[in-house]
Amino acid sequence: MSKLIYSMSVSLDGYISGPQGDFDWSAPDEELHRFHNDQVRELGGHLLGRRLYEVMSYGETAEELNPAAPQYALEFARIWKDLPKIVYSNTLTTVEGKTRLSSEDPVAEVPRLKEQPGDPLGVGGATLAATLMRHDLIDEYRLFVYPVVVGGGKPFFTGLEQSIEFALLETRTFGTGVVYLRYERR
Image (tube, rainbow, N blue to C red; front, top):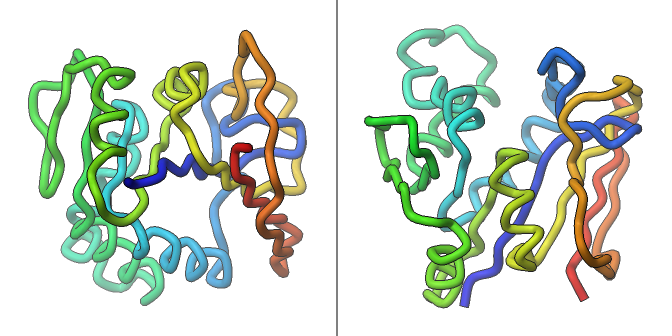
């Protein structure tokens, strides 16, 4: 059985993007980028909403479009390109690379995906993650807390009908002041 991991950068006041959708404050330095590379390398697949897919689609062509990018960024692009992905969208008609488009209800499909043996699955995108969170389908939460207050925007945690209790599994502080928090749902 695979576990589902929700991993995102988050401001100190709890947002993954600011009031205008900006998230430039969360650009990782080399140390953090290499940590992300290692984490994504361990995944068996990734589930995305449409908006995150559109942001991350640069990984499909990053090596061709920007071969002079730092080696750690190109490494991430290769890892991302090779990773199987599922995009949940009712508006997209095509996707690229090792990506499957799904118009199925993720609340129905994700439990079946989790029943399959294999490496953990990642989930990203605030709307998709919020839906899965409300249905208690996320097993692990990985927050990269940035030392910035953005004052509003898209929250990491959305309104829930019940509380979620966690066990702390790991913490790490990076040179930039970003704090990594890894929690498992109890």
